[in-house]
Length: 350
View 1: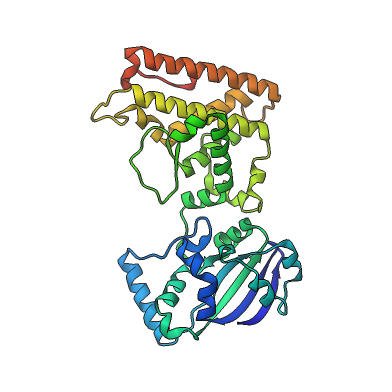
View 2: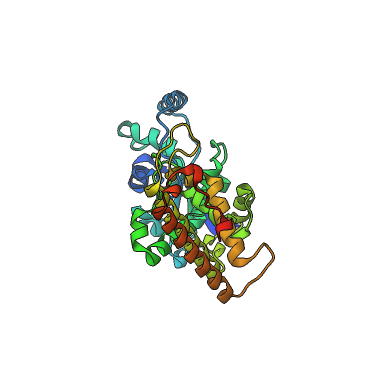
């Protein structure tokens, strides 16, 4: 491997190391990441299904066999803070020797890597260009993948939401588990690549995050693109959870939504030809979920601009908890609540 250049990216506090290496060296470094969808949250796997992808892959394979030079693959490397400080052309070889394969990710170049590995045997000593994006924090590797890559098919907003707010959605799930372990077992948060017929307790991760944003802004109409633009300014995404009490209020409100979801799914009959044919369909609607969460936020914290004490917030949350329990008892007790036409569960119940 030849180290050509080392540059500091002051914006992201990372280092870019440009190298030339043979394919055998590259496979030793990147094969584990390649087999694990790039080894970075949100990275797309090799595109194989579409006819357009098949044509592009064939063209790339033919070009590679004719000794075409591909743009550099970008590998993300998680290093210690001390290694970041001493990293330069003369020391990079030694630093790389101590890097575990599980700390390597393919930030940009999954499709090129597939061509390299499919044609590996006859090209072991073939030189390729590889850039290393080195950081002491994985979120900075995400920044490189999402913001600095060019010439890619743009990610849709839902995928960006899932990746950027992944830490927050995980923390929500953890707190739900701490508060109500049984509910955690029933809860199923789906990523963008998971397609399942909805059941009670099943929510898209992007919908959960949109509820979180709506709860904090106390706005039903959340401009997720603006929120994403704001979040790109932060490397530590958990800074978004800057108010511990508000986060606690959100988790408990989401827990109430889940409990209502399960209660309605268990108690309702199926009605053919309706928009909501059964109870589990109600919270399938993102606007319904968002409206419920924003209503909870306004009741607990007040409308936007109002500041209440933590004690007042908890008092109001307890009131909502009790009223949700009464609604659930009503659903389970009275036959009139077992058909969707007669069921009215709005925040005016609070």
